[in-house]
Image (cartoon, rainbow, N blue to C red; front, side, top):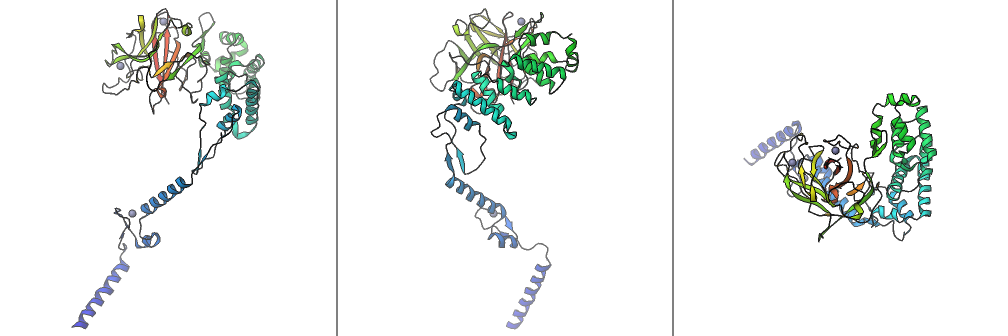
Length: 450
Ligand SMILES: [Zn+2]
Ligand SMILES: [Zn+2]
Ligand SMILES: [Zn+2]
């Protein structure tokens, strides 16, 4: 009997083995990790010590993370460096990404370092830019420094412009703002010879914007440039890129103010100020019913703001924070004493925002107007890491330049200031641009973001 049982078991054993060897799917094993419900092939288990591949990868990631956190080093490239030029060089130096290195950032905003440059150091910065331009892979860094030299401290970068023109580079055209007569004439020459990017050359000329340039734009009949006028039918629009246009008499009309005061961020203890930001208005939006918001209200008795042409005691820029993104532009009437009203000239926002669209009004007076002026072109480059909110100055266009026309008189409206969301709300982006037509007591707001 015993022998028979053993025999039967042997038969079953052999048959099972045969079955296994013929079976396409071998028996899968559970992963050894606790809480993991995956199964793996025996061959995988042999390679991994019994763990599934996702568990193996997770373990590796954890080990890598632990290694990085145990071995990561702070490198402070600015240690004992006091010369602002040297700080600027380090700041703009591209750093290799290395998970084991944390580069300690410079403690002050970079614009403050540029403001500290003396004349010798400015000359040194210009020489440095010229050296970078000679290298093939450093052009972007060179241009970035040049932009900051012009926008923050209005440095004379003639020698950089000479080098750019030699290379037939005219971009960013803003750099040519204070170009010499010699450079301007070279640009005209390039236009006549039709060499290089014609659109960039015309933009650069628009930024120079002197009498000769104004004459160039107004004399559309000039046979010398007939080809250009024909090939660039919208060439008059280039003047707006540089913040001006021709009036009906062919004179230059600036579309922004050269005076500029930045807003300063307020963290706590918002003090009372004669100028306010983000105050709720009594009047409401005729589209969505939300109460209007004054982006900013300026007390025009302030001597600093005498440059603003407006016959009211206060200038309020009214907008609907819910509709402004959709209605481009959003018009409001500028009333007495800082009161505003939704304009009948507004077109229906398209698409009409939903009434339950949430909009966040930043805390009232989270921004205060500084009494220290700054260059009008301080944040002409929207990538500059500076407070962009300002009254006056040149707009920080994120997309294309756009100056609305006044719905009453059709004149182009003048840029009066801007508020960057990022200056008021954490993790936000986008800029509100404010314009006025003082003759018609009309304001307009537009909005751009990436
Ligand atoms: Zn697993
Ligand atoms: Zn609305
Ligand atoms: Zn008007």
